[in-house]
Length: 426
Image 1 (cartoon, rainbow, N blue to C red):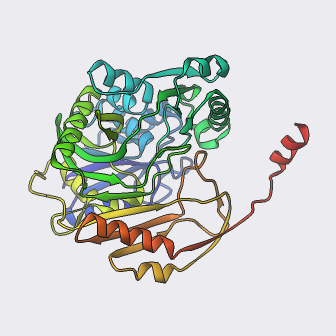
Image 2: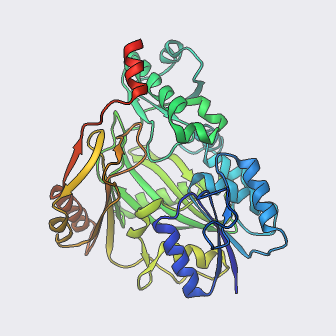
Image 3: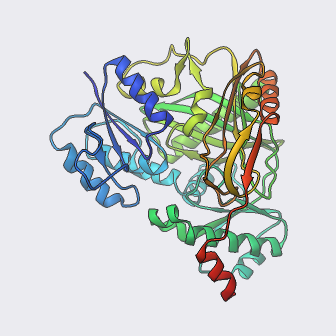
């Protein structure tokens, strides 16, 4: 029975799918997660308790917990779990992405440097410490430009500025996010003391899902992002695959992504890439050393319906997955954006949205009473809509129609004692 160690920050959808696939394949799966770190085996599943905000301590805890146990494979879900997984696998003879490569993926500045040195198209960019004078940085920028944190994902903290006044406002807003958000402060990452400034890139945006086998990349899917991402914020909404771009454009995207993952040094396991494409070609935005996040993976099926997680697990334990091709039907997902901040109360029209032709499911992940924070500060969505159809255009129509049938009730959030004191003192 193969033994696999799965690193994950939560016990959500992807973890359940991995566990189900492991049972079907006869894989002995052990979880390394941050659910609890006080009680010994608190979940009764032999999981290894870690803290992704404390990488040295978590690495020591993993090595101690593993001891003489032998693992045949490692899989990681999420950015921070992938960093820890890379550190653990480097201590054993388990194929995975090298630690330096994973950390380069997790640092937009380092990744940009590597892309530029390899001759990939990258916008003009520079990095500035949060302690620097924003006025000097604003004078240094070309407009329009985009300011972004170095280690966040899903466009969190990414803001477009069209002139110096907007630059200073964006700088202050990102600085407040990086210094005050509890999850960012808990991670204590050095690159959270910086932000990156890039020239704004016009063009259409795409996501590319792939997997590497001992250094050889394979593209699994290209997702179109049909909504224009022009700012001031860059909230992702709809992903649809297969891409509607012509063969030449798709070939250029695949070639650039393959070069990017090699330049970063990724070796074995899944990756998720983001890029822009315009009249001048492909412009690499970033590559993550992990699969597409959360529920979005439900949009991908292989063979006769195999989920992405099972394909990743089969690959990790050494199976040949070449014959597993993407399902023939077009598919897509809509990440339901948060229209405004407040407290989530209810949603209307759920049955009507699910009844739209082509819609597979509508899943609302927001919980009653949850405080909702939209981008650029927020890190979540209201939920997800999934659709399949004969072609990408039909999938996109189904997603938009289903979304139009939903009505969300979001109450105004009362100010906290802390925010009230800040207002009074200002």
